Length: 469
Image 1: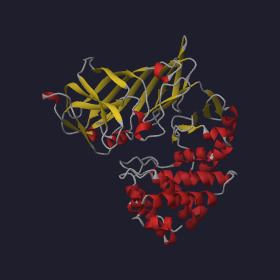
Image 2: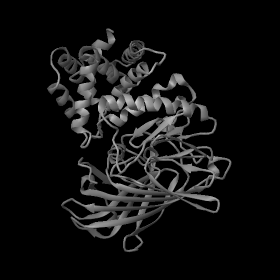
Image 3: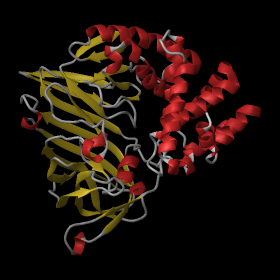
Image 4: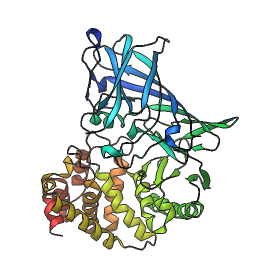
């Protein structure tokens, strides 16, 4: 569905005449449906021996005021665009080249553009069929350290961050990120060796053909999580929920299942029933350490740390807490919700008998954040509202946790949870941006709590609090 954010995609067409520089308003394109088909070779002993072939069918509408002649795409740097057809079966001219994205040094992608057979007039709908193939690589060298992606037979993962499928975007990282917030329905089909499972929390149909498994996932509603870990998984049913775990994690998966149930009961007691659609249950999927845990109902990908050690269970609580938070996908968001999850992970851990108290945990967060500001004096002049624009959303984990801890201390448990629940109930269906959150907190606090809002969320006075802590 349409992303309300208006951005400009500047597309550099290769050649002359009709392939000259063209500008496209991303808000003028409403993606209605994305159909992804992939066949993966995972039989090679080494990742470089494996490859994939894919077909992306994207249906979109021109909701702008001008006709559209060309459409830009980005794809993982080790992949190629093979052929492009439109909905009438006409082969379309496409140009592509390896290019560094704007606003992300050293992040290279296969940047392409497709010239439509005829201009797409306002209000009209068309579909593009993009065949692609190649290998898969992450972007550790560009600084995105958790993207360790390869076509490894032991574990691989397909997700947005490494452009694992064609994304409608110009060659600009900020535009790519904004594209993640697009809300459209999707179907994703994967043909993998019978030894492997493709994991996700959405509805799935499984078909077995000889020595291959065909997984077909359907989104239950627009905007759900397109992320697909692939491995020789074992599946554990926990009530209505599922856990996919890697070989050797059987004991840890059972321990995690128990803590998961306890944590869900806490969160539902505080904020109400977990968001659900079409009877979906929650799936927690183990991924190797360092790959980066992520959560969006009904899918959580959880690094092996929480499976392998009871002392790391707070990482699970962090991801679970995101399921009871408002979606805040505005462009250049400071991602303050990560700070809330950092606070809640320790709060839940203390409630469920963890080895470290909330006070001790927050003292460690304070020490680390203080050290960060001492080493980087220029950060002291950056307000939380600007963390996204400055590319410093990582600060939100610590700074945000400290903000919520201060709020917790002045409001007390009951008042604090009431504030969070009120915001969640008000905006869980429509989402919100940082300004909306600040306005809501201002309207629903007074006295010392209101002062905390002003000190931490308006301006940079909070840095003095941290440095003097």
